[in-house]
View 1 (cartoon, rainbow, N blue to C red):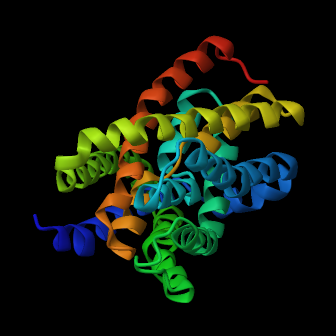
View 2 (cartoon, rainbow, N blue to C red; view 1 turned 180 degrees about the horizontal axis):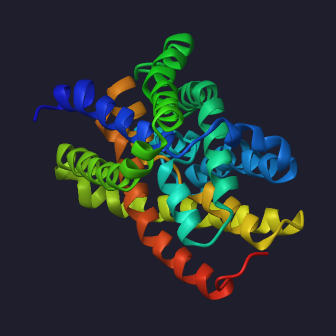
Length: 289
């Protein structure tokens, strides 16, 4: 499969499919729940849309990243959570309803914040020669490839709830397969530099992942949220939509090097997710609170 076919056709279709899957688990009540959990949702959104990019920016400086790799780390830091974070929050015995609400709200807001953060990063880190994201056009593109499929999934759930329930698990598995294929394709494209990129980006992406898991949990603890809400905000802060990050880098910016941080981050977040699920199960056995 040539890169142009991958980035122009397969990647957008795979992302749209994944977002339809996320929509299958959403209802309008997930957006209204923002009113029910104003403090928890506000803290979660601050972590995802403000603290996450700031921590990403700090790590770029700390690890002395430059050029396309610096922008690539900022791309994944600009991305919201996704269906994966909802699943991990559920398996970690967090507040699944809050997780879904946070993903819904942050994904909606990220349509606007992603092009702003990415364009700032391209200019700041010396990638002015790269394709700049036209803000209005990019908002429209991300809207079409994320929010419209989510809305489609929600309509299916409303009209055919039985079908949505039956399709939920298979769609999750297929979404994981699509993500794996996208990561493999991104790494094959840069296979000659893969070891060097992993050595360079592995520590930075791991620090971003673990750092935001910790920041989310600590901030939720400071504001005295319940244990389930702390777990959820931690997961939503530290588990991002890697497929969207690769889409922005490969399809919108047409820069294969910028896909590497999102690809490596996606691999790392699955490994740390296992630890989060295990630790949360021990700290929060069966109970609520």
